Image 1 (tube, rainbow, N blue to C red):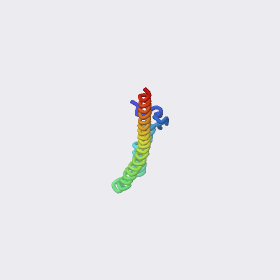
Image 2: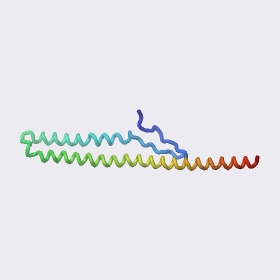
Image 3: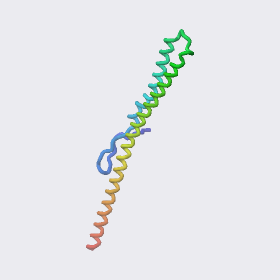
Image 4: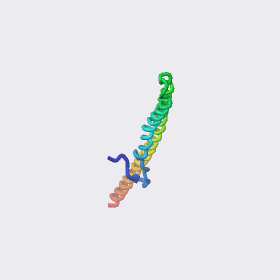
Length: 125
């Protein structure tokens, strides 16, 4: 199942709608999900390897700081990426709204032209 258009969409006013793809945002989303976990796990493993001969109970504050840092990193990256993704879809929806409005105006103009031509043809006949 594809979740994106393969090409831009040609609108009624002959402008090309930019392609917004979920796939272009997939790599950053995966990085947000995986990178902080790897960072936390790697930092924790390095710290535990360094402190393997000592008692870890007094060092729980440092482990907790690793966890807090990781959670802050995850939240900030998620907010940043969420804004970017929402902005790209917002731009596409605004473009679609403008194209729908222009198509509606074009339809009204065409109907008015047809009506005028019909009135002219009935008045001649």
